[in-house]
Length: 258
Image 1 (cartoon, one colour):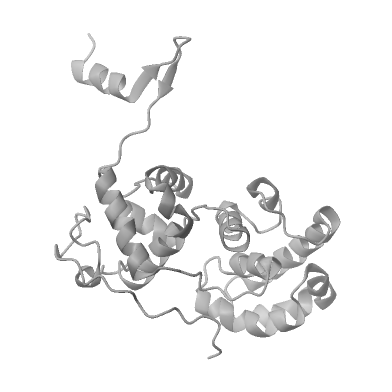
Image 2 (cartoon, rainbow, N blue to C red):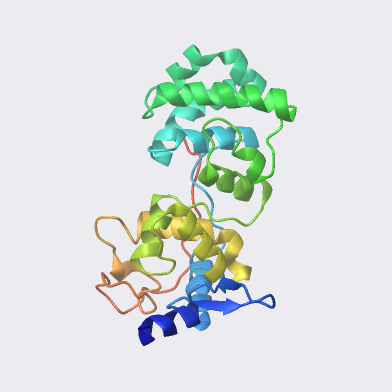
């Protein structure tokens, strides 16, 4: 005997197309469209022009910086690449530098030996397959050694102005914590975020969420008293319902030597 609840659930999550085949219907967000609009409006007021915090001088150095940032902090990567990018800011210069000398520049970064191999390999592939230019499509970018979907999305957004969501640890945590786009994998979270974020806010949403996770909705303890969306947030961990004052934050300072 069919369980009525199961049948009802199936009927709400699937619909028939014209050919009679079943297609899945994406679950609705627990946030209303009005709440989502207001959430990202506030982020836009707080940080009108958010920026990534990895220092780079062109699309190639951005690819390298993002690849090096896996399991490392932006600050740690920046400290290592400031000197590196002065001598190797193109694929050919990186090849000329060589793997051994490259390791000397990035040895303070975790997994630096394997990352040095990947950087040299991706530099060679850029020259051999792409004429020394960084490709603009995700499909081409992920063919580069050490470049996965997250890195490709960052490069597409920051280097070429293509709206994407790169799900790093901060975005993955926030999407699940505040139930904005819960998912078990980064790809699942990315797909849901692309669907729920209002289109007019999509271009900057990646950086808004990362910076919110880095400085407010922190991993160990979310600082709800400093959160501008505290009243909208649906996290079970929330400790405050009163939003912080909505004011524009001071401009980000990036690329200043320590």
